[in-house]
Length: 269
Image 1 (tube, helix red, strand yellow):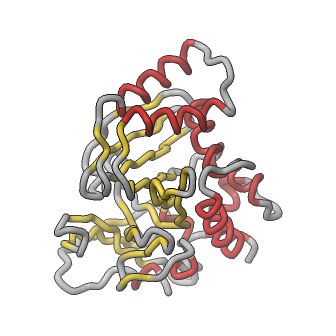
Image 2 (spheres, rainbow, N blue to C red):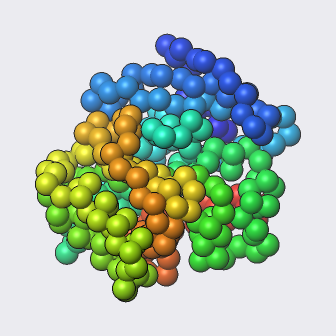
């Protein structure tokens, strides 16, 4: 299935734009079956002759209609394409997974990358400097390259802010044993964003990595990342967080596995 078909055309109100890669793209605002909330998508049309992203291969879950992918273990629905606050481009889903703790599922997660991956694979290979496919080196290259990516986390049970931030702090601590002043400041911002919050089941958290030293945090009760709640300005903290999901010992092996599967299909052809 191509990206051009992932969003139905009925009842959409498109605004056409031209992206830097030369493809026509339209931003569609639609009311879709996620509790009646409004979700924004970019309905993409790849330029002639370019490979389109086979999104149906992504995520390790079943497709829901034309606009969503279901994470199979939690039945959480993620939009195939997403626009987040703080970035005007479109992101496309690359994989889904879940995290459990003591055999209890805590959240579902999805990994999104810049839409251009599905339009011009050769350009992506050049951006990340890939020559042969190895999941560890590819993820490492993506995180160091100027490629926008976002982690979407949807809670499947109530979690207090302190518990959630402590879990992510443990992930970061694998890479940063003794934080310097910049890292301490970013870790403090990260912690204060979640402390004192009661994160209810269904709460969505978006960790959008725009560039090495800029990660935006958005927290939403209805899967609509319409505002930025915090900005993390440490490249090492940002890298450590993503390494916890896609490094050698990921907290969600299913997310890493499904993302790697589609990346391999895309980048080795």
